[in-house]
Amino acid sequence: MPACRVYAVLGVSLTDPSKYGTRIFKDLLAAGYRVYAVNPKGGELLGNPVYKTLAELPATPDGVIMVLPPAALDGAVAQCIAAGVKEIWFQPGARDERARQKAQTAGIKTVESCFMAENGIW
Image (cartoon, rainbow, N blue to C red; front, side, top):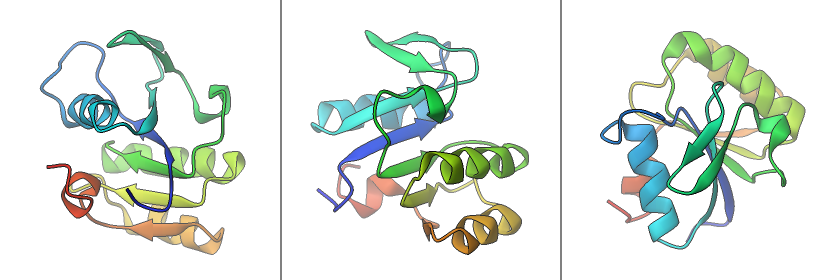
């Protein structure tokens, strides 16, 4: 497992289990990670609470896995900055140069790669 041990997945789907955010959340749970699901609608996924924002999480995640459209990344990075997140993984398709630079300026490590592939989960 990587150095960060607590993760949040921003962009889980509450209705479509084939969406990448939901698949990542499910597979991280199965691999033994401590992981939180985040979706602005809130609710429940796989028997776990879905939080509306990072600020609602019971613990600050070390890392956040972004599975969001590029237009949503700026606001998501702002949440990460406010929450004190140390690392952001911008998944393929969830990339925006302005958001990445905003995170780096705030001292957050950014990775533009598939978290699951890089960590041998997929």
